[in-house]
Image (cartoon, rainbow, N blue to C red):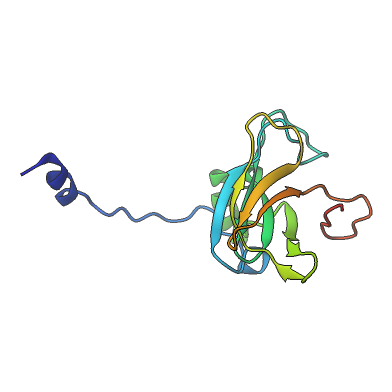
Length: 152
């Protein structure tokens, strides 16, 4: 029996439990097509700037861009909250940014994103499920009240 066949017969399915789970109301409505960690040079949180990035971006075919913060997903902290009877829901760091095709007001479903490891700007390139290539700037405007708006 070849080694490849032997390896396939000895595989065992491992069941894993989640550590943190997002609430569907604050998350994507479609499948998450891509996830990328934000490079260290990009400032995401102006209140608590760190040299090491602790945020990542998720995109979906629903047209939403969501930025998540991993600082609040500490396994021990979550277990402690749950043991005290408190519910833990992992929420986005920045409310969802909705991408739309300008002329038609149609949501752009994002299938892939590209961030450069050495970049310092809050931008990324994206590919849509219809074949569009776009450059996205997720800068939050100063006049935002209770939500994120992209600058145009």
